[in-house]
Amino acid sequence: QASHLPPNEHRYLDVIGVAKSFKGAAIMDQMNFRVAKGELVSLLGPSGCGKTTLLRIIAGLLQADTGDIVLGGRNLSSLPAHKRNISVVFQNYALFPHLTVAENVAFGLRARGTSKADAARPVADALALVRMDAFADRPVSALSGGQQQRVAVARALVVSPDLLLLDEPFSALDRKLRETMQIELKALLRNRGITAIFVTHDQDEAMGVSDRIAVMNKGKIEQFAEPSTLYAQPASPFVMDFVGLSTRLSGRVTEQAGGIATVTTNVGPVRARSGLAAGTPVLLGVRPELITPDPTAEMNQISVQLDDVMTLGSKTVLHGATTDDDNFLCELSGIRTDYKRGQTVTWGWAVDDTLIHAVPA
Ligand code: ATP
Image 1: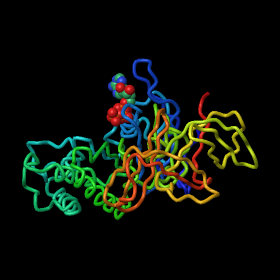
Image 2: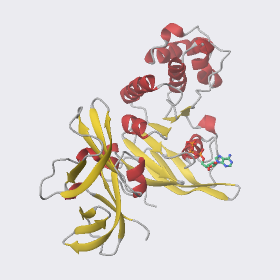
Image 3: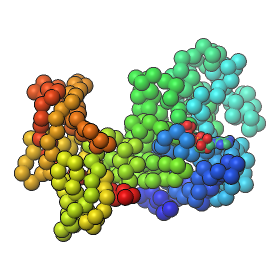
Image 4: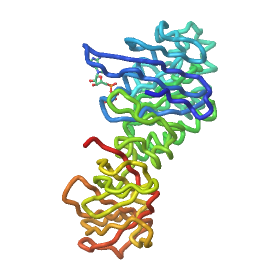
């Protein structure tokens, strides 16, 4: 597996050859990647792919079988969690319910031997940062989910960590609050130049909060790139399916000419820019908003019967009928009343907008 370099090749966090097994079953093998100082990175992947395990290894809460964690030039591998200067915000926030907001935030400083008097100023600053200063003397048990999350972030930041790790930090919040907190937290981390790694299985969240995303599958990074790259140039069928929706077609390359592959599918020939040879079984994808119901002659074209028209306000999603694993989605902006279920339409898209991946036969 290639090491994943940030664009500026600036080293800050290096995860080198990390492997972990539980009871003889390998969870991850040879994990390698690099994060630059100040970057916001997400580990994105389905449940069980090893995101939390990796986070715990970086934090020092779990010992890797092999490999090293290097942060700011310091090899952390033999250091216990409390000597790494890494803060973790856990999914359930792990606040102490019997302590006040200020006492919770002070906890990390007090554990490092800071006196109560000396902790007061940084605690007040951290609470102000997350706009919770008015709540300092309340018990955390009296706070809403969003407020508890702010306190957990203040508690993590008050110790000036070299790295902040967040495990599904928004999952306990409802959708509206989650979006607000994502914007707030991202701005806060950016302003303070904090390097952070989010663990999430929610692609919208990862796209929204991250400079780069590591898409994980079964203990491996399938692609580590900026959100726009993952979406426009997914490196594998897994990434294409996990990040965003697409019209999907399976088929086989039947002609190769000058770097254009013609693929035979159930709904006719489709061209893609690819050097794959005739005979190769492939999966094709097209992002739904790149499909037009008014194609030009040079576009790929397919005819589909609409089996659903979903009006979502800012957009309308047309769904085409299929009889197999293929999937037909076309997204149009705004409300479109001119399409009806049962209607047959011709969809088109540019040859260069066709995503193509070889798949096992
Ligand atoms: P989720 O989003 O559900 O939290 P995840 O991607 O964070 O998933 P991990 O929690 O890292 O995944 O788990 C990865 C794999 O390791 C899973 O198959 C899990 O069952 C296994 N696993 C994790 N911790 C242990 C443990 N202490 N003992 C045995 N197996 C474990």
